[in-house]
Image (cartoon, rainbow over all chains, first blue to last red; front, side):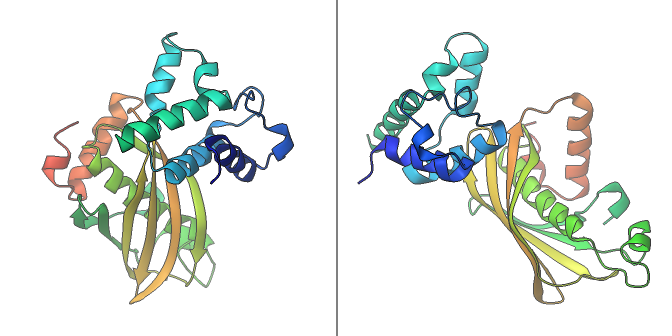
Length: 93
Length: 157
């Protein structure tokens, strides 16, 4: 079974037409990979479907806008995967 | 339908919130300036207006589910197929069901039938955001009542 990171990286590569070797756990989805809001909608939909979750993007955006979090905490892929794992775990609990 | 005003939905004829489905009636007018250009001597409903009709139908579903507290804006159309021509005067029935309610976005699958056959279908995605101003919100609530959105789905706004 693919790891969370492998699944997310695969989704980003397929959805945003990005070469897989350019995607790393330390890539920032927006700043490094250049994923815009429309492509990110595709990515979010694919991730929600793949993991059976609802990523709280509105809450994350609000926290970033209020300065409580940095975009790195949500959009660097290794951090995004940690958040996805936490959402999957919370759903299973 | 008043094509030149982008009023595509005449009436919500069925709304199933638990089932995440909606059906709307959309009567194509006999005459419209749109048909003068599309096409001279052979008037048919433009495919982009079929897509708009599906988008508005799905949009009413999203609005109803959210109690008209947020506005769905069309962001993406996937796999749109125009399967048949639609002529002036035809009655259309549009349907949409919610595929996914994400955080800040929503996805529906929609279709339109006319004359007993499916004329178009697509997957439609919306960005769902707070109303950008009170003017739009008031206009949407007024339109919601015109198309027959049940009052209990307007109250939350």
